[in-house]
Length: 137
Image 1 (cartoon, rainbow, N blue to C red):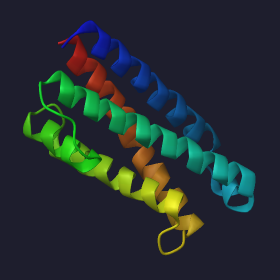
Image 2: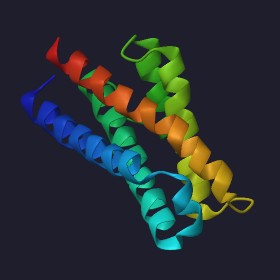
Image 3: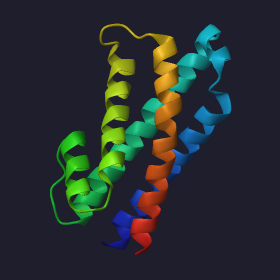
Image 4: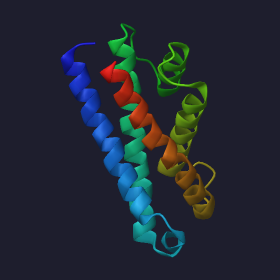
């Protein structure tokens, strides 16, 4: 993998980590009653997932394959043993939640969304660690 791609991946991983840190710092029951904080948390989650999706696309290109849609890129990385299957599933789940939050599919239940973010944000942090370890190999 060339150094330019590695550098770009590292920048995107840093974005994921920064967004995760914001979410972990602010995610509590209080955000259910604070629209501004809730929307900020949703936006941070959206940006974390988008950065993780970008990382998946760059990793795929770094493995000499054309990037495709977010879900195909995750599947490719699972098939190549870059990601464990469970993590791949969690990334897809995070992407689905991101889509719901952005587009408001079937409305958004804030309590359910906040619970899901709390569960998925751990996986985004773990994803960052896996990517950094993989790049260092």
